[in-house]
Length: 273
Image (cartoon, rainbow, N blue to C red):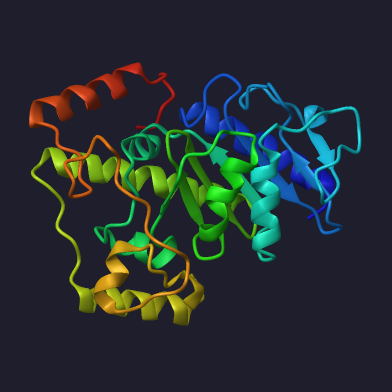
């Protein structure tokens, strides 16, 4: 991708992130890796809904600025993903409310409740907490990046990445949509997982179609335990200290309804949710 196209797409994606309440204020960051290895990234301390093409920063492959614009202080997260995944050309980091609620609760999005999500995204693991803009965060993410296309970061937010910026955004949107459905299903009494044989068929379909390759078969994915598929990515993150010991958060129906009502009424008018 050429630089001008990257600038235009980052501005468009930034506006979408803001309009859909995936970010507020100066939250979040977006980047694209150009064909020559340079990185075009959102600038530090700027609202993603009010960026212009001229306001974006450009760095070399190591993150060193190549102009007078400073990139986001969280660019190291993007650089880690580019280093670990040569196939990735774009990264979106945001704080979508429902997905971030999972991250704050200490939960991964890894239950097989939607066939489309298994086909196109796979599970979204939870990286342990690390201070933003430090090596703590990138080291917590490192074991998971190779085998997943989106991550939750404990008490922080979500990041998704892909072969282009629209794929990265689509994956972030799928993450948020899945989290919202999971929360709504809990209000209705709990979700019902797909059976193991159906999951294995979906995995075979996605690999044959090229949606995801076999690197996505990982032991951090709760639903893949049932199909005896695994890869060496380390132990699954522990549940939140506020859980009941089973990895699930216990809330009454009334508490869940109240939390959802607050989340929906606090959104901006343009929020698609």
